[in-house]
Image (cartoon, rainbow, N blue to C red; front, side, top):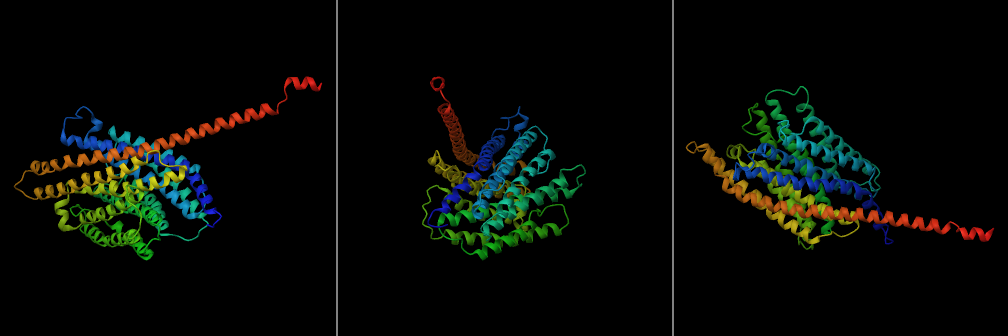
Length: 488
């Protein structure tokens, strides 16, 4: 804050206060990401060789893919985003993280819930609601863990020295409120003793999926990008007015989307969803303009570092959001429904948008928090190229295959089996992309594990050194027996 270096001292204190909570959140998130990708790869292999897991009920497509999707969202995206939020709130508030032990407890509760929920799905105990497959006991654990992190984040904001609110504050604090509201409401309605009957369940499920995959990821990912892009580019965030406009329109119009055009519900629901999707183009364009003006002219070399991750993530957000919005257009939904297209868009939002931005943020935060360089910086660069290339190979074939599959399904002269089999050749290419993403995430996991082990080893050495020094000092002050006799 001044030439005497108070800013660096304050930053070091802030980073030190976030060290243990972030290691707990990031380490578990990276592990769940690798396991989720491995389960997704096992699930899609059933299309290449149907009898591969014939004797393993827990690796059938219905169970393995549901568990993989939940691991990507609940296991990786949400805890990693929460860790980044805590660090950003502390840095913007110019104070150490408030109640640092609370996020550590919350991280353990969250990871325990993800473990129990994943095992429940694999062994056939899913609730049957997409993106809400975890049973009620697990939902309680996740909600409790999330609220504990939210308490720490809110307390940090309450103690802030800098009273100004930045665009990152708007998006990230809204993300905290949005998840608590949407996840808690959906669980109260669907995972309860007396759930509603009929099509109401499906409507609530569509509403939850839209709020998690589109609105919440957009709030969290955009807030993180709006913090790191100007910091790394070395220039202020461009057009804060556009950022505010994009924020307000996103939270207002984004929640209208989610009801498919073919849903067996009153006609006004799909119509409102279609209009909401059309109006949701406005915040997507506004966010894209802010990001483009911010990075335009930035003289930052893009060689696989955090800047590359975040720029790729923002680009993926714009493209995947426009594709997602296009699914609710009545003209295109007739072709794209019940195909691989929706699955490809969802994976692009999870891995191409949220995954890349979070990986870039983690690589930017970890060296600061741990007060040291990454153990394998070349693996971090390899992570970017593997994941970016893997996302393209994974998603684009699914989109193209979904369009062809939908066009074949609309032709009454083509049997259903033939129309479904048309996408198999595209699945082979997408499986290659999944493998590349898995290899890239292994680089992230290895960096986090090694940094954690180095930190713990350093703690052990420090404790041993302090213990030895205390023994030496104690023996130095204690009089020897010969000295006692001489004095007598």
